[in-house]
Length: 348
Image 1 (cartoon, rainbow, N blue to C red):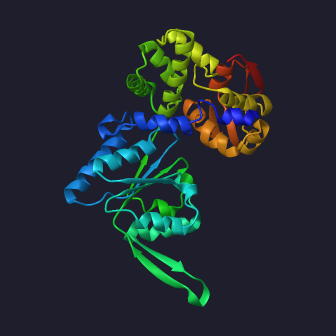
Image 2: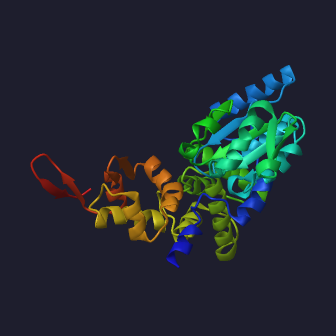
Image 3: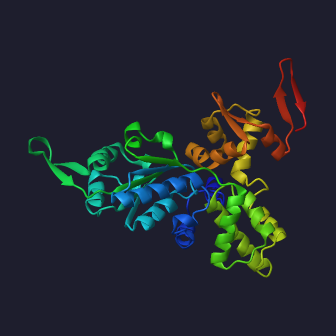
């Protein structure tokens, strides 16, 4: 039961059904409206302009990085800027090669084919993508045994845009067929502040600068989480007060949601406490930590660990995860450190 609560946490960067509906309205439609990731945006802008001048389609593009940073948004912006239609799917959704053939043969010249979580494509489907990406052709085998025959499908030139949160799981063969590869990093609080103000303006929310700054600080560097926290603070302000969001109201609302001053939630703190209290600060293997928390390893690696690493609460060593001094200080726990002569306890 506890596991379900964690997975539905406000700070889970994965998109919820509510996010899907709201993000359509909040999603920037122009490349000039996209906040942060300046180098990525500039490179995409140049690539689009150059392709238009040559009257060519773009090269295939791969976006990588933690969830919630705008990979899907950028795919839709590319479609908008190039005037092309976009067809979206996810890696696990394409179960058979026939499904892929059906999608690809329906794409028109210059259309965008967006695959989210592309690292989760099955090997058979992935291999069908290779000739499609390189030569815009597919060889499809029908029947079996002595009756087997190959049908060649010629495709119209299209742009494959892939998004992945685990670029290390992509095969070298697939990664090498993308002409452009961009990595999206966590946002800084100042950039998240702009995201929150833009969302508040679109939704008609009155929010003071101090309150917006407080939400930005606790949003784990992720716009999706920032928008989600803003909505929950808005609900609290409308029910408990007059709807106006002040810094004090935002602090009360976020505390009620279990989001602390550093943007950590219950699962984050439990992971840190497990490493410190059960494994003496680490190093501890991710499998052991997951077993102690009764959580899935993927949940810890995809949802919890990226921000804890980025914020400096844990570090990865060859022997496992280790809590840092910052984690001890944040949890107000005495540190146990080793010196060359002896181990001594001191207050962080």
